[in-house]
Image (tube, rainbow over all chains, first blue to last red; front, side, top):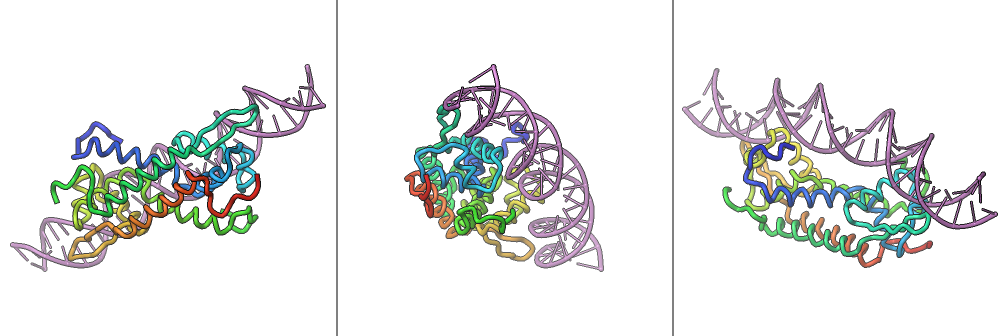
Length: 118
Length: 118
DNA sequence: AGCTTTCATCGTCTATCGCCGATAAACGAT
DNA sequence: ATCGTTTATCGGCGATAGACGATGAAAGCT
């Protein structure tokens, strides 16, 4: 997105926004929220199990799991012919903390690294 | 999305997921995060001000503001020829609470309204 | 009255998302 | 060695998101 174009009074801040947005984007889908819910209720389960609980094709579920995986919100452990997925509880807490920090700061009017011109 | 198709062991829960996803989707964009940051730092400011801080066209910023508005994260007060936007601090805190509750529950393994089979 | 400023909306374009079926790869079992 | 099971990935399709410029409406200014 034209990164080196104009340092529009935002350079380091922009990266933080993009990181946060990336994490949120992984979460911002009803199916992925459902999947996280399912995964959190069990120790670990394979893709097939998740497919059994959702009205979606296996390939679709696999892709959603991949998104969650790449966002670092779940972990996978290949066990035999199946892949055991589990929520990364630390990552969830970290994301929760990041979202909380951002939203609370915004709500408090303490915009990070700002407050210069009106 | 084929709502009345098969009550796949999720009916009320699905709505909650969709609501949460909707709120998160509004937040899951770097530009909108930046806008929220800007708005939180000032009491209220108009679209033009936001445009001045971002390398984007006025129409684009206006649309992002509309998304935030429809998600209830910001409020607008038309004042003369300009629109004064301000963060809805209560809404931000509410969303923060919802995200926090969901992620914390997931991290704690307490998936809401689940825990049956497997 | 004109002119400027500010904003919202429309239409368009491109890129990405979300879904699917089909297929291949990896593994276990017979 | 040959199945059956599970998973990941590919290609395609429709829908949506995100960006832009252009336009029009509303409000202020001279």
